[in-house]
Length: 525
Image (tube, rainbow, N blue to C red; front, side):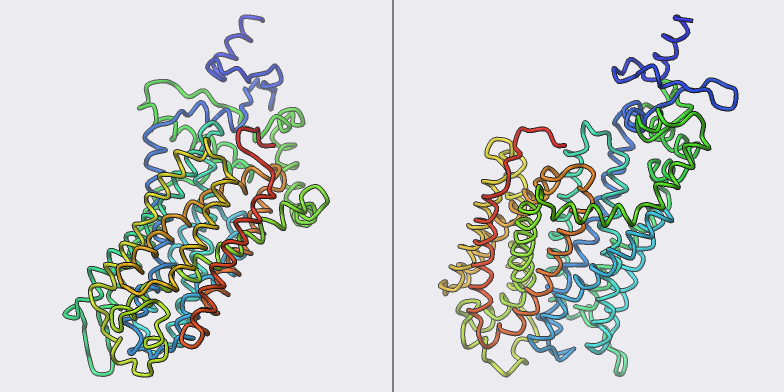
């Protein structure tokens, strides 16, 4: 009997130390080996499948970035075609975030019911179709509606793609792989800026037929739909998340997916011994057969709503209240400052290119003749591309120094220095100075976003971590909406007000981060 047990252990976990005696159960009269989901991921190894998964999910993240940022590049060229005022431009920048707020709740609940992969495909499709519709819209109100629905798609694909991707990662490499996936947002930013530079100034790409106009900036918008549509199409070839399948009681389907992952990573060089799969050790201890396990899952499913309410209340309980409120302020401040200014850079560069001076030069701000800025020059897109690619050094730097310097110091210094760079934008008078300060802002502010992602993961217990992400994301999107709307309302008349408001909020958020608990080098709980 002892020899049999030893053999079962070696087949089960291939020597993995976390095996215990309770990991074998009798089910329907036959002895089966129970493997915890995390252990099954460990057995799958790391290889070709995970690399392919990274690029697949990364392309989806890039497509979302392209959608969110693309409208900022078309604003200068679309001014006359859509008769845009500065208020209209503010709403065009903001409406995608409004759609993301709606889509985040809508798609998130569907992903728990119908599957990660299925909802990811549909949300990417909605994103692409909405953006494609905006490319042919001839009036502002229809363009705005299409942008909203495109944002609804982004609101679903962003959280779902990270959930789908994470559920294939073993805990030993999960943090690093998620950080790597997050860098694809910067890739989308660079692709959007480069595509705008290549396409929008080329008027010969335009098409006219009677009252229908499909000029070069609309060609750019249409091309921006390709990443989301191609990403959605490619996910048809991908398997469903095995963790989702297991949570739905589809154990054999989950095992089949894990065998596929193991086969891709190991080139069928060694057998994959897995017969009985459970989510956690608690499931092993509490389940003697599959029916009981499945009943336990459905019982848990019924209590999800009450757990969500309890988790939200716990975030504002005595032990977590200060951390929760501080992070809400930081998220709001960073989103208001970053998106409230960064999405306006192409428009502001266009004003500088036409009139000279600074971002808030009175000549450009009070001009009533929009015809002079309807054809943006090549310099506008060169400047915008340089600002987009300025995120690269900030991303690289944060990866290498985060453990040495710490999360809080980097977040605080990034936000305060970002605020200072915006403050000095008011004083520069030359075009090259404005571009330099804008690039400095892009390079520094991205460090703050990276540190905020890490802190939001480490500061909350596992049982309320997902809820905290939802609450903090809501604050971030509200900040992005208000930042763009307020900038659009004031940029022509009181330009200094939104500029100094952005600078002040960024500095305030950075100083507020100093009261957060230290997380560097400690175990998360």
